[in-house]
Length: 140
Image 1 (cartoon, helix red, strand yellow):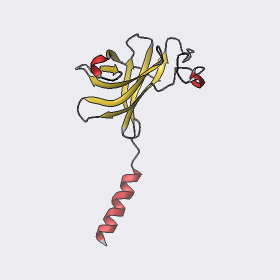
Image 2: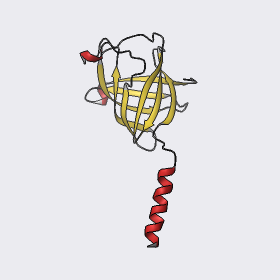
Image 3: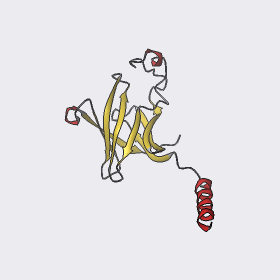
Image 4: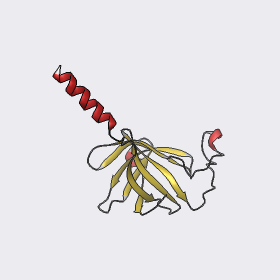
């Protein structure tokens, strides 16, 4: 009986805590310096949303899904489904590149300054491309 009461108290306390579904990792400028991404955790996975663009009205005209070509890129989530290894790497995620209309498998690591090193590839990682996203101060 005491175990049941303890379990109920634990669960009620656990679920009364504020949800941490949107752990904020920071803002990062794209390599081309034309957009800022907000990296965050939702559930057990990591994502990045475009929160600023030099040309905010730009549409996703190269998207392979014809129904999305009229949508703005600003506000989209082109970095998605990453899993954190608990140390230094986010892996098994995808990055959609609106400049090409292609989606790449990807992994992300951080450098010593906290900037992100994003490796995108199709098939094998060795056949991919690496880009650097610089941490920036940004207020939404």
